[in-house]
Image (cartoon, rainbow, N blue to C red):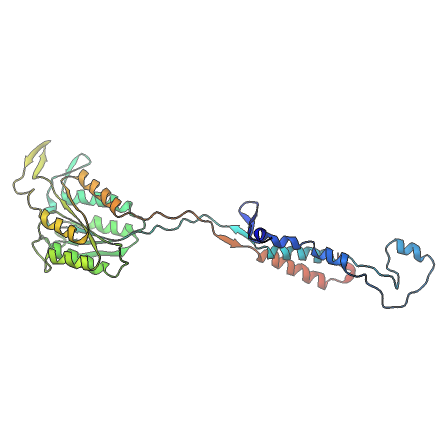
Length: 340
C-alpha cells in the first residue's frame, strides 16, 4: 500500500495523481450504508391490511427496520473529496536550469599600438583592435552563464562594465571602444590591479581575468610583477594574450616589412604573470591564432552545463475540493424531497 501511495497515476496530457491510494476510499460510504444497522421507526407500529404487499415494494412500514440509500449528491461530493485527497497535479512547461559559469573580467589594451593595420579579417586588412573585437564578440557568444565584466587600459585602466550576466551590454561597450580612449601608453599592472578589485569579493575558484595586450608596461602606478602577486593572493587566475603581427603589412597583396612594429611585446613579463597566478600565456600573431586561443580558454574555463530539463508539478486539488464543498452545501440546502 505504501508503494502505491508513492506512485503516480498518470492520465491525460500531463495530469497525474500524487497519492492515488486515496481512491481506495471511494466505496467507503456504500460499505457504511451496507454494514450499518437498519434504522427503526420510533413510533408504534400500525397494523393495516395489505402490509405485506407494501413491504414487498420497499415502503418502510412502522416498526420495521430499513436503510435509506445515501444521497447521490453526497456520493458525488465524497468522490470529489477523495480525488482532492489524491492530490491531482498538472505538469507545467519544461524548465531548463540556468548554467553556472565564471566571474570573468576581460581586459583590452587600447594603447596607440593597437591601431597597427597588420591583421587580416574576412579577406581584408584591419587594425589589431578591430580583429580583437571580432574574436572577443565570438568568445562572448559562448559564455552563457558567466558574469562578464570589461575593462580597458592605456595610460590608465577603466572599468566599462561591471560583472554582469548581460553579455549584450558588454558587447555594446566593446564595439564602442576606440584606440586612445584610455591613453596612448600601456598600464598592464594597473589593469590587473583594477580587475582584482572587481573580482576579489566573488566566489573563490571562479575569478578569472583574460588580459590582451600588444605592448610593454610603460605607465601606471602598479608594477606588473606586484600586480600578479596581488592577483595570486586573491585567487584570481590571469590568462595573458600577447597579440600582434610580425611587423609586416599587406599593400596590394604584398607583405611589406614595418621596422619596429613586431618586436614591442614583452612576452616574458606576460608569461610570468600567467605562471604566478596559475593561468596560461598565449601568443597570437594573426586573427586565426587569436580565435584559437580564445577557444582554448573556453576549454580551460568551462561553463558548467545545465542539469536535466524539469517540469514543475502544479497542484490542482483545489478544483475537486471546491466542487465537493459546493455539492455538499447544495445537498444540505435542498428540501429532502428534491435531494437525489
